[in-house]
Image (cartoon, rainbow, N blue to C red; front, side, top):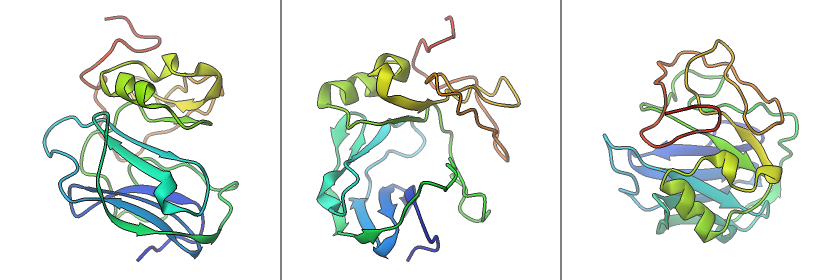
Length: 179
């Protein structure tokens, strides 16, 4: 069951299962099979969605390959997320759902990425090099500033709270960073 009233969520459940939800009269849900991610290792996780109420139009990728699915529930009359804040790693309304791991390079595009782009990202390509005109948010989360930069050009800076930050994930180089 979900406990939020609007917007969407991209979460880990049952330790190694990935779930995408969008709230509405009936919640849209697409959940990967168990053991989709490997614990204690870097995993590149990516979701594409066309904005429809059809769960089969949500695709979850781990390390460049689409997962298999255990739950597919179509939504009905999805709620607007226009006024919702973006939270990464934990919602601001609760502290009992904190992601127990390290997150690097969260990115959002106003486009569905193709298989070649997904593969490139999973192999370490900088999000700044993939359809930069449609990149809406990209923060490497280097942990070098009190406000983390947005390299998408949209100035959607973010503040990290309650987390220990690493310099960067184990791939690169990244936009604005030299090796």
